[in-house]
Amino acid sequence: MQNSGTGAATPPWVVNLEHALLKSNIDHERAIAVIGQEIFSVPWRIKSIIASGEFKTEKRPMDASALAYNQDVLDALKREYQNGRKLFLCSALPYSVVKAVCDYHGIFSGFFVLDASQNDKEAVRNSTAQEFDSISDDFELISVPADIGALTAAGHDSGQSGAPVWTNVLAIISAIRVRQWSKNVLVFVPVMVSPVSTTENWYQSILAFSAFSLVASISYVCNDLLDLQADRAHPTKRLRPFASGALPVATALFLVPSLLVAACLAAFPLAITFQMTLVFYFLLTCLYSIYLKRMLMIDVVVLGCLYAIRVAAGGEATGIRPSEWLIAFSVFFFLALALIKRQAELATMLKLRRTRAGNRSYRTEDFPVIAALASSAAFNAVTIYAVFVWFEVQNELYSAPEALWFAIPMLVYWLGRMILLAHRGSMLEDPIVFGATDAKSLICGAVVFGIVQWAH
Image 1: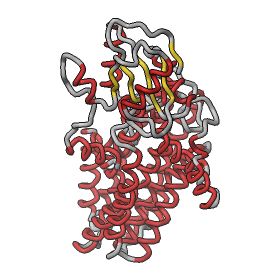
Image 2 (image 1 turned 30 degrees about the vertical axis):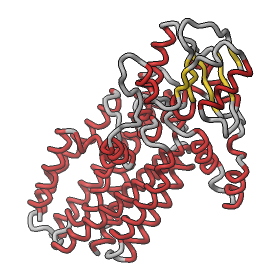
Image 3 (image 1 turned 60 degrees about the horizontal axis):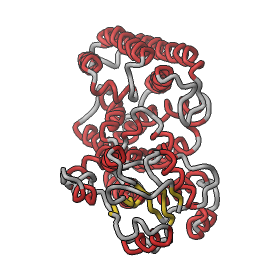
Image 4 (image 1 turned 135 degrees about the vertical axis):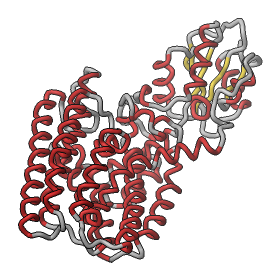
């Protein structure tokens, strides 16, 4: 027991760190961190670490600021502290963890490190009696967030123990990034640009879109679990369900298998080549999340490829293979979007006066170079598109190929606008996700789609 005094006019509160103050399970988070660090190790090495409890051992100082706290509970504790109440922590977590949390918040007079079995009021009472008699018969144990509501005059529930099921549903929807599914509309590109597409092709594209969205959600969940610490230090990513503690990390144990089964059902009716492309995409996204996204420039190349794979997969699903022109255009177009995404991240870091983005190899001093590369890739894509149009006009595969020329100003406008918005720090999301909610981007997309249909 560590303390700085015991006297108090009101009964002290002893707060259970795991179940009342924290919104996430530290042991679960550590286990996931070990899996991420040892992912390239043999399976039995990971199993041995988890089974032995080795992951619970602190190998570096605990960063208490990177934990997910129940903000309502914390606010209530701070009010009581300001009113003169003595506060203590109790926990079965390692000494270093409890001490780090106690020191970080500065509102606790001390803490109790209990055995794993000592997690009820009687156990805490016995432990406190051994340390000092002054509060052994007069203290309140905050076992869960709802205990605070019962003890305060306001009588409100300061936690989420009574949260409606709908709140958890919304958290799951946020965790699987339904908004990010807009990136998977790229699988519709082959059927959209083809002059010979059928209703069956559109149905196949819808199934492909569903399969890609579900697989992408698996990668988002895994990525968020591996990036918990970095996300909690980010101004917007800290609000993600796993980082904020809105969803316990154990939720992934049923979420990931459920998404995988649904993805397999969506992909089953489609061509085997599409299924192989989907598997390759999933493996590449996993490799990207675990390792490649931390490698300078390789990350943007892989990110651009992940965009382009969606287009290729749409062709495999429908049997409408993208032309060499479309593939070449896609490579530069999506490379530009990947660079714009990094440009936007660096702009945010500049605003926050940080030197580098978390879990990335880029520094803020790289900002002008990334912006230049994004501009070059974007206008290379426009050039390739112009050559493609000229080729199609000569080949006369479209009934009105001259109409395709009108898409060039729209491409120049949209890409230029994305680069400028990223440069200003006005884009906080992936460019495609941003475009899906941006009115001007939607108008550009509708105009280009109309031009392609006109050309058909």
